[in-house]
Length: 306
Image (cartoon, rainbow, N blue to C red; front, side):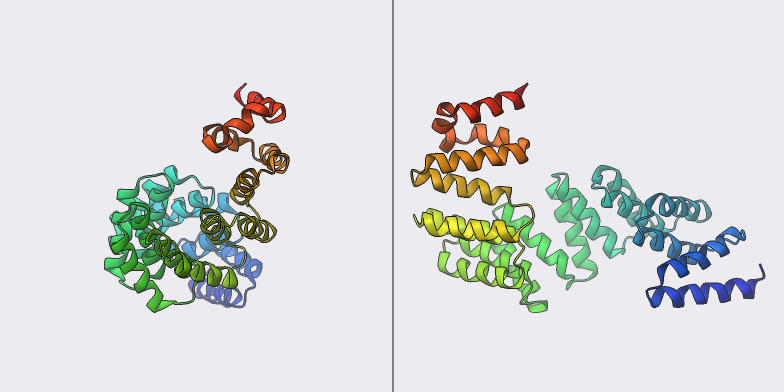
């Protein structure tokens, strides 16, 4: 294939991609690749296209070919890391993010996703470090502000957390995660009325975000408003795909109201669908008496031990 034919084919492939015609773009990129022509720029475009089409093995193959051509190409290492990220295999993703950063220390997205990966494997100090690095590159990077704020809140560094989430609020004041994190900080400061306002706004903007229902329900529960808490948990269960924590807290509210059979029924449903909750349930002092007296719950917990 002559050079001008190749260049023309790549131009047309990019035009198809921009129009959302991904399969047509893929076909033209592959024709260029099969002609034996190698250029890291458009090869990376093809790898990203494979990723977008969820053809992860093919994307990996192209990234490895790019690295063979240019071992210092940061986007190729980053691309491989993202492929592992898709699989939630953060331990494998981490060294590739690190390699991308070693090739380009100013690679903002590599710092961001490396921070996220470290957060997922429980290495908070390194997560904080790389979110800070991302913010050194771009002090208005929205998700770095939000995620770093959440990490500081987890560590009890509420002033730092509040500073960061307020900076995020200047960028997107009505984003549901900004409102949620502001609600969490209000809870920490025992400002329950303000926290409820934030959680209500969160739910209004993102009705499927379960943790807003959880925290709202917990506030009501701790205020002794058990029936209201049960209603909130129930609404959350209808709107959220994975609401096991909402069902669990609702069951505990039923128990506090003396509705033992309803609590037992709810817990049995939870154990049936989420057997991994058994360890958590066994450690819950609030449920200790019910577990001892419920033959059905004891039988299921015994099975999970074997």
